[in-house]
Length: 196
Image (cartoon, rainbow, N blue to C red):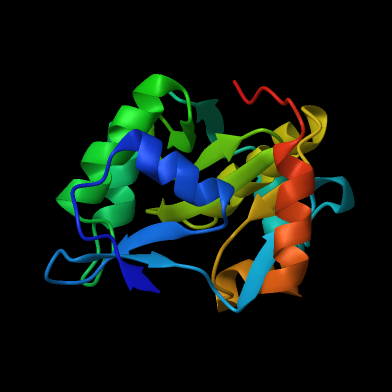
């Protein structure tokens, strides 16, 4: 982990992702580059773990899933918590990257209202998951299921979910060393996949 030391630019962020780094802000707004020693990843071709309760939610068809229709609201929803690494500077640069076609949102809607979602960065055949939020039960998980389906359909080979946590592990994330991650990353970056 080391400090960025300057205002983030889209080109700087994309170059960092290609090397396996990603930015996170501290409470005072200082931004550091992170590279976990142990990484949580998903391999789209292997799928994910879907619990019985999530299957029931999916069968009820409560949510309409949309892609890239409300990115600003999704990143704001992800930042709306007591402690967040999503600073105004992070929002600014990821909004620019969204406008450039690198960053995408997956959204869960209920009766015309955005109730959950996630966003991430795509380069080659890799989706770098950034954050998710939910305002209704399983809304972010339904968005994640839709994301995994799209990644598999579009032949993506890697979904990086960064640091392991209870939520991603419950969805079936695999833990890999930094060396293993670099190999997966190099392979994924060689692919030419289209997310939208």
